Image (cartoon, rainbow, N blue to C red):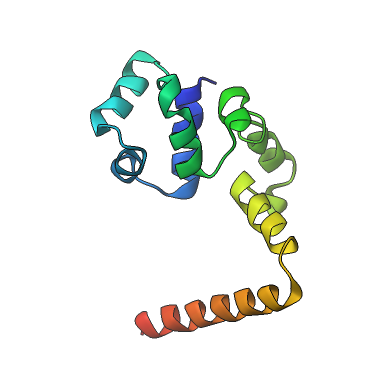
Length: 120
Protein backbone atom coordinates (compact mmCIF):
# COMPACT_ATOMS: atom_id res chain seq x y z
CA UNK A 1 0.00 0.00 0.00
CA UNK A 2 1.37 3.44 -0.91
CA UNK A 3 1.35 6.46 1.38
CA UNK A 4 -1.48 8.02 -0.62
CA UNK A 5 -3.50 4.79 -0.35
CA UNK A 6 -2.99 4.83 3.41
CA UNK A 7 -4.18 8.44 3.56
CA UNK A 8 -7.31 7.58 1.60
CA UNK A 9 -7.96 4.55 3.82
CA UNK A 10 -7.70 6.64 7.00
CA UNK A 11 -9.92 9.35 5.47
CA UNK A 12 -12.58 6.73 4.80
CA UNK A 13 -12.29 5.32 8.34
CA UNK A 14 -12.58 8.83 9.81
CA UNK A 15 -15.53 9.62 7.50
CA UNK A 16 -13.67 12.75 6.43
CA UNK A 17 -14.18 14.14 2.95
CA UNK A 18 -11.25 14.81 0.68
CA UNK A 19 -12.29 18.47 0.55
CA UNK A 20 -12.23 18.76 4.37
CA UNK A 21 -8.88 17.04 4.50
CA UNK A 22 -7.37 19.22 1.75
CA UNK A 23 -8.53 22.39 3.51
CA UNK A 24 -7.13 21.33 6.90
CA UNK A 25 -3.79 20.24 5.41
CA UNK A 26 -3.51 23.31 3.20
CA UNK A 27 -3.44 21.63 -0.21
CA UNK A 28 -5.63 21.86 -3.27
CA UNK A 29 -8.31 19.15 -3.55
CA UNK A 30 -6.95 18.39 -7.00
CA UNK A 31 -3.69 17.31 -5.35
CA UNK A 32 -5.49 14.36 -3.77
CA UNK A 33 -6.89 13.41 -7.17
CA UNK A 34 -3.34 13.44 -8.55
CA UNK A 35 -2.23 11.12 -5.76
CA UNK A 36 -5.01 8.70 -6.69
CA UNK A 37 -4.61 8.86 -10.48
CA UNK A 38 -0.87 8.73 -10.70
CA UNK A 39 -0.22 6.70 -7.56
CA UNK A 40 1.88 9.62 -6.34
CA UNK A 41 2.71 10.34 -2.72
CA UNK A 42 2.47 13.69 -0.93
CA UNK A 43 5.50 15.94 -0.75
CA UNK A 44 7.74 15.53 2.29
CA UNK A 45 6.94 19.03 3.56
CA UNK A 46 3.27 18.05 4.04
CA UNK A 47 3.80 14.78 5.93
CA UNK A 48 3.62 16.34 9.41
CA UNK A 49 0.50 18.36 8.49
CA UNK A 50 -1.15 15.24 7.10
CA UNK A 51 -0.32 13.24 10.22
CA UNK A 52 -1.65 15.99 12.45
CA UNK A 53 -4.96 16.20 10.58
CA UNK A 54 -5.38 12.41 10.43
CA UNK A 55 -4.18 12.00 14.03
CA UNK A 56 -1.63 9.36 13.10
CA UNK A 57 2.13 9.21 13.50
CA UNK A 58 4.60 9.68 10.65
CA UNK A 59 5.70 6.09 11.25
CA UNK A 60 2.14 4.86 10.72
CA UNK A 61 1.81 6.89 7.53
CA UNK A 62 5.17 5.90 6.09
CA UNK A 63 5.25 2.23 7.08
CA UNK A 64 1.57 1.33 7.35
CA UNK A 65 2.11 0.03 10.88
CA UNK A 66 -1.22 0.31 12.65
CA UNK A 67 -3.05 1.21 9.43
CA UNK A 68 -2.62 -1.80 7.18
CA UNK A 69 -2.56 -4.16 10.16
CA UNK A 70 -6.09 -3.06 11.04
CA UNK A 71 -7.44 -5.02 8.09
CA UNK A 72 -5.86 -8.19 9.46
CA UNK A 73 -7.27 -7.50 12.93
CA UNK A 74 -10.74 -6.82 11.52
CA UNK A 75 -10.73 -10.11 9.61
CA UNK A 76 -9.57 -12.19 12.56
CA UNK A 77 -11.64 -10.40 15.20
CA UNK A 78 -14.34 -8.17 13.68
CA UNK A 79 -16.00 -7.46 17.05
CA UNK A 80 -12.93 -5.77 18.54
CA UNK A 81 -11.97 -3.52 15.63
CA UNK A 82 -10.17 -0.48 17.02
CA UNK A 83 -8.54 2.15 14.84
CA UNK A 84 -5.29 3.88 15.81
CA UNK A 85 -7.46 6.88 16.68
CA UNK A 86 -9.52 4.74 19.09
CA UNK A 87 -6.36 3.46 20.73
CA UNK A 88 -4.98 6.98 21.04
CA UNK A 89 -8.18 8.15 22.72
CA UNK A 90 -7.94 5.38 25.30
CA UNK A 91 -4.24 6.06 25.90
CA UNK A 92 -4.95 9.77 26.33
CA UNK A 93 -7.81 8.97 28.69
CA UNK A 94 -5.56 6.81 30.87
CA UNK A 95 -3.02 9.61 31.12
CA UNK A 96 -5.59 11.97 32.66
CA UNK A 97 -5.96 12.65 36.36
CA UNK A 98 -9.09 11.19 38.00
CA UNK A 99 -10.87 14.54 38.13
CA UNK A 100 -10.18 15.11 34.43
CA UNK A 101 -11.55 11.64 33.62
CA UNK A 102 -14.77 12.46 35.48
CA UNK A 103 -15.12 15.76 33.61
CA UNK A 104 -14.51 14.07 30.26
CA UNK A 105 -17.18 11.47 30.95
CA UNK A 106 -19.59 14.24 31.96
CA UNK A 107 -18.84 16.08 28.68
CA UNK A 108 -19.52 12.92 26.69
CA UNK A 109 -22.82 12.37 28.48
CA UNK A 110 -23.80 15.98 27.80
CA UNK A 111 -22.93 15.61 24.12
CA UNK A 112 -25.06 12.47 23.86
CA UNK A 113 -28.00 14.30 25.49
CA UNK A 114 -27.63 17.20 23.08
CA UNK A 115 -27.53 14.82 20.11
CA UNK A 116 -30.65 13.02 21.30
CA UNK A 117 -32.46 16.35 21.65
CA UNK A 118 -31.36 17.47 18.18
CA UNK A 119 -32.59 14.23 16.65
CA UNK A 120 -36.11 14.56 18.10
